[in-house]
Image (cartoon, rainbow, N blue to C red; front, top):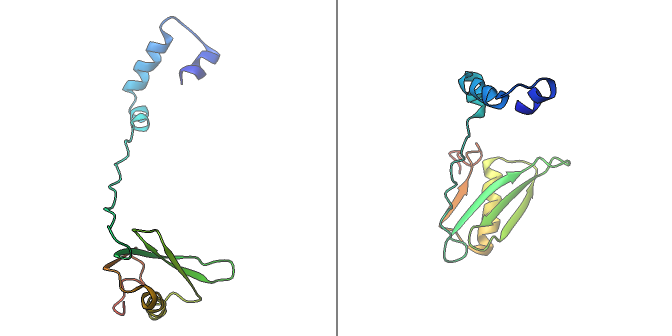
Length: 121
């Protein structure tokens, strides 16, 4: 605001006057408040592979396929499965394929997608 004002007018103590006006104006104080971000709490990493995993869908892709992505928190190893539908029965089928090769993780973290919180899952 000060630099814009200086382009048009100037007077002694103009910077201080402008600062005082801005401090008193409620709209400026609301916009000018610093919003300090809340620190992100890091997840405790497991000490061995395939204990904690995360899963989510990516898509739809241009060909209308979806990707089911399952990631191991320890090693960052990823399993990716293509699917045309994202219903619970299909997710269970894909997870069985993954688990048959890697075993059962202790926990799987997922967002609150309706496919992940259904009765079938």
